[in-house]
Amino acid sequence: GENVEQHPSTLSVQEGDSAVIKCTYSDSASNYFPWYKQELGKRPQLIIDIRSNVGEKKDQRIAVTLNKTAKHFSLHITETQPEDSAVYFCAASRGNNDMRFGAGTRLTVKP
Amino acid sequence: DGGITQSPKYLFRKEGQNVTLSCEQNLNHDAMYWYRQDPGQGLRLIYYSQIVNDFQKGDIAEGYSVSREKKESFPLTVTSAQKNPTAFYLCASSIAADLYEQYFGPGTRLTVT
Image (tube, rainbow over all chains, first blue to last red; front, side):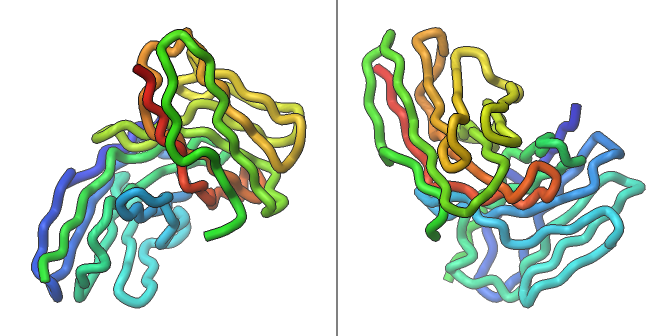
């Protein structure tokens, strides 16, 4: 089955700096890669996703890149703000309810 | 934030007791899921249901049971056979099994002593 590894487990940046979180996956059949943000005590919420027919997707300060050959994808947050502080999860899926999540990255943005 | 609800937010039980966690959605979604979240381990799939009256085991189904008698509801029972039941439980739904995006409920934190 699919195995998703996520790094780093914790990340601390200064406000205004960029943050990058990386994930690798094992199943070459995976074709959907969402990123979720979970604030303390709240539910995970989808912030961006990418499908395997696209190499990069951007939404304001957030971008995701996908390298299918290397089987890794990354979340990039630019101009970080304190409200970006949360746990971020990557996931990989080939459909059919087979979504596997990474262990999460705790991002702290220092003001 | 609406659409998918879980109750209660916190639940305490004694070891050896079964307990049922509620999950309701009014999004008209066909697919529903239960995940368990432990510190440092991400989300692990317990059970999922693609349509009413159908459900399938996920990676860690042992010690859990579910039912899907109504489209809106997907309750999870944590039985006394589950060896480490204390965890944060998240319910999710999606329009259909193959359309991928999952919407999560607020979660239930279960503590068993």
